[in-house]
Amino acid sequence: MLRLKGILMIVLGAMLWGMTGSITEWVLANTDLSVPFILTVRLIIAGGSILAYLAFKKEDIFTVVKTPYWRNQVILFSVFGMVGLQFTFSMAIETSNAVVATLLQFSAPIFVVLYVSFSHKKWPPRFQTIGIAGTLVGLFLLLTNGSLSSLLVSTEALLWGVAVGLTFAFYTLYPSRLMKEYSVLTIVGWSMLIGGIMLGIVNRVWQSAEWSIIGQPKMIFIMVILIFFGTLAFLLFLSSMNYISAVETSILSSVEPLTVMIISVIWFDTMLQNVQMLGAMIMLTFVTWLSIGGNKVAVEGKNTSERLNS
Image (cartoon, rainbow, N blue to C red; front, side):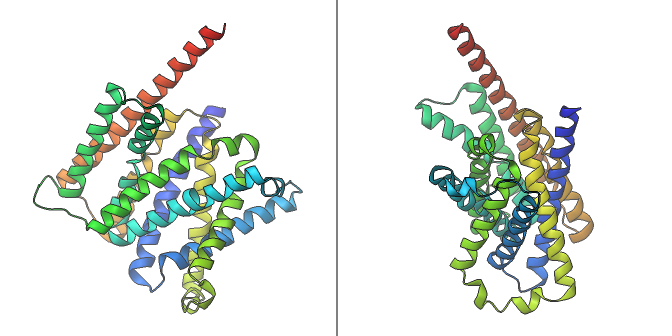
């Protein structure tokens, strides 16, 4: 039952995150709201609501920010994980579309492999090299439709897409120690609130003329949906790791780009060309290959360690 719970969590979380991508694309295309403003409001309200809920339940929410060591980790996760991922993802949507931005997010395992290889000062194993090569081939087909002379997205969109992969890798790797010490709700709540406040200060959100736009009844409804779906997606994604393996998480999270594609076809009449579709499928296949191979190495390493210690 616990495994089934984890599977349902990651599938629902991936679908909700995909839906927020499509909604964000509509908001950016049809209103004068900016990415920094949307994220500031979204993060502060979501983070504050989570912490208020935990405080109402009389759970300890302040120990993590009172302890310098853990507070510093939360701040780093807030800036480079929570805000970093949402900001780069939203900018990738604004400069391309939700489908491309979501697929570029799946380049994250490449950066994970490169980070691990660099930290261990050795080249990646053969299966990882094959996985990276295959993912890059799929990415090339997605972005060029198979033509060397054309790039179907702008250079700016491509750079934001790379940033999405980097921040998603950080978001996945970094909070593991925090999650062992404190609840997912506590970490997500503080990281959203801290990140939102920092983003608001940098962009002087109190001086923005966008408050008049967001105060419209239709926009209030859309922002409520964005905040609720986005927050729930983050909570479900992180919580699922307690019940299922990284391999299953990687495979099942492929529901996300599929959700975005379906919504984009119905809502925006956006459709990838045939070669782009092939590239997307190749990319998702080799991302799964990377995850499965990485899990096997981790298991083998753990078994070797146990034999040596016995």
